[in-house]
Image (cartoon, rainbow, N blue to C red; front, side):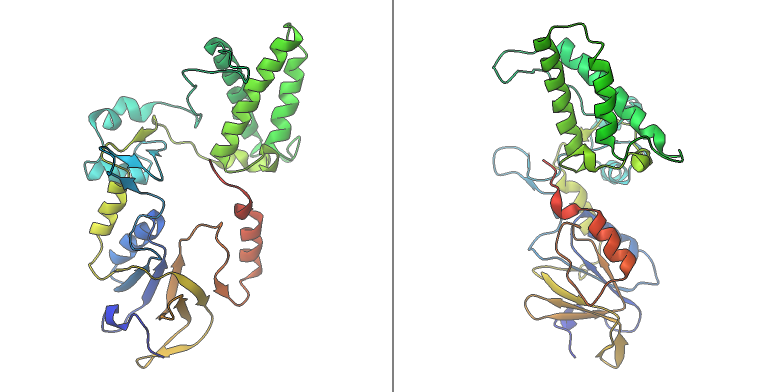
Length: 316
């Protein structure tokens, strides 16, 4: 069987590694592999005509418009994206300052500068700050059940609602004022759903919620465009590594696929009929995409994929 990508395959023997997906995860994997002498033959199969995945910066409107990712979360030395952006001079003085890197946000989104009720009336920022402080203090408490034998309730949503219910009983305000407070808290719930990638905090398990590590640093943008980060990754790769316009149809694994006197355990089949044999395949497409693997995946793999529920939630 001849590979449709034979004109892009490097000659000689050695493990062939295919990376499916040219987003930041795939580019990062390819960069690491290309820098290791044990992996001389690496190819990245990208479905579109460009690299970067959801990271895309447009300059057609007189400035930089981010179509995808907007900012770096937790820009500090423990963040590899921040390190890469800093290394290539993509950040300004303020973003690189020690002061900015040491700010502890707790992973919480900043408060709005203006808030309005559904009636159109302006909501006091002091009241929003008060409810934000309450919500985030309870959210921080919900991370404390990581090492306990049994969490008091199954989900983060249930825990937060139970705690809020107890506090509502002690509010001295009139009923309308209480409703406004609860409406503000409901907005914080919605924001946290976006942060956690779920359409309900009732679907987020309370016990392991504290496993998430929040890096310090005030979230920052990339002045010249976030795509500069992925452009640097692409520039660091050998010229023949990227293969564009190759949407993958099926990954045949645990097989025996001959080519040029060598047998490969994996065959990646593209939508245009092209086939790429390999010893190893790194799949970096979003979990929300339907599985593209032929044959049964290991039970633990299928179970983990299904329980992620990634096809059922969308971040706004």
